[in-house]
Length: 265
Ligand code: IPE
Ligand code: IPE
Ligand code: MG
Image (tube, rainbow, N blue to C red; front, top):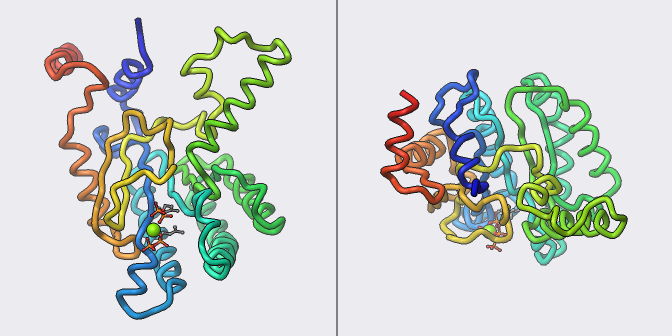
């Protein structure tokens, strides 16, 4: 029986022609962690760490666009980050809005498509309007797709997909036998994107913190002690190098993969 995993293997072996290096990951997903500790190490307020984090984002986006990586997903604010002190949450919201106000035109000029995933209904009207404006303005761009996960949780994503499916079953548009992995995929917030190939978490913690839970099923995981504001082009190159050294088996044996490669040659 064909499985999702074997489909992934097929798609992983068929590079899109315009990619810089066919062994590069198509989709890189990053948990940008360590802003607070970066600032605290310097005896500065956490806010300074978040500002430095935005600078790191700019460089990494530029690098991914130059490398012709197709999708970069950045975890900017989790559904659990509302638990932080009110002052920090409010600072993060202001920084989010100010960054969008400053960067959208620049992203557009660089042919970058901006997307947001997460429950945006909790954000201020002004922020929601700016997010929608950014998405509309850049929707036809076809270089890098930059996905910002904001008020995002992997469990939220699955719940909202299941709710849509449940409604369709209730109205008779679907029957329970239609509920397959492929169908659920279609209702996730990442439906139109390739699955992440490479997951990176900076800041030394080795956990997923409710990021793309469903989508990470076969993603290669990479953890680094580097704090997010210090994460630069060299750090990303190290992560990509590690990714390229791995054999992605998707449940197959190593021998099967070697045989497949020799058939393709
Ligand atoms: C990540 O850095 C940024 C957000 C969660 C918004 P942190 O703020 O979590 O930094 P640390 O983990 O406290 O150092
Ligand atoms: C995860 O980082 C969320 C983002 C980077 C936006 P956290 O710093 O919030 O994660 P935990 O709380 O240490 O797991
Ligand atoms: Mg953290």
